[in-house]
Figure 1: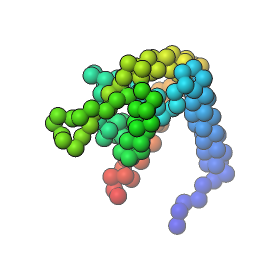
Figure 2: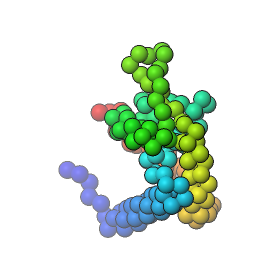
Figure 3: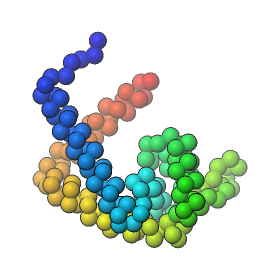
Figure 4: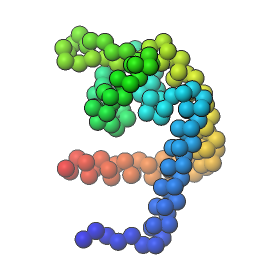
Length: 153
């Protein structure tokens, strides 16, 4: 039998859930209005932008952002059609391909980053203030608990 949540547990969960959803939505709206880039596109563009040679394998992108490889592959196909990325063969693995940041993708990523960073600062960093270390520790504990359960499966 699953453990029951108390009324206080639900109050905290509901506040956290509402905050997370509204923050995600506010950041998505900002990305779309500033650069026409969606949050999923930005996650991939930013990961490619942080890569030393501006390219990653689909499996590496999936691992970075916590998606299934098939979802990443479909998203990359849509982004390729928009000219944000391009695929190229992987010499070391005949079955693999690289996903590379295009010139247009780099421009879109940089344009999106300015507004995205400003929104994160306004809606999160500035509001969090001195509580940042506690939230950081909390986030690490939640991720560790999820990893622990996943590795037990």
